[in-house]
Image (tube, rainbow, N blue to C red; front, side, top):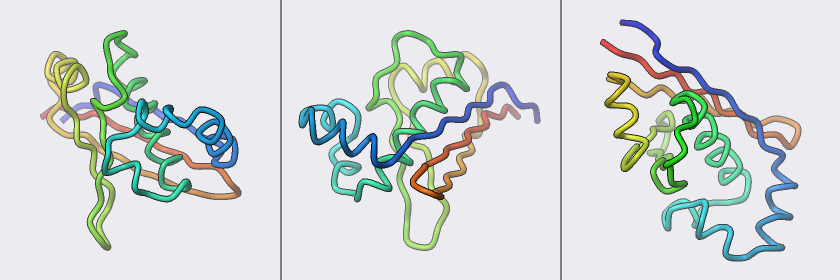
Length: 118
């Protein structure tokens, strides 16, 4: 096992809410249909996760916001679903496992991503 990428990002929940209210189509650009059903606090965590994935991959210029989706089952840890250009870049790096940790405190959402090879 070795780590081939790490990324972290923080998002101010209220600020994201203001941007989404000001530009209604922004939610469609940033989030998948399933993600758009979630409360603002969860959207902020997902936005931070998407940014953290980009950083862990070295910020390739061809990523789409919809290339990364955060899913979760009741009582389970959040899971990254990676497709498109993000999945391709991950394959180039030899990524075998995508680890995600989300945290929320004091109006801030934080995401930490670790990319691992076997």
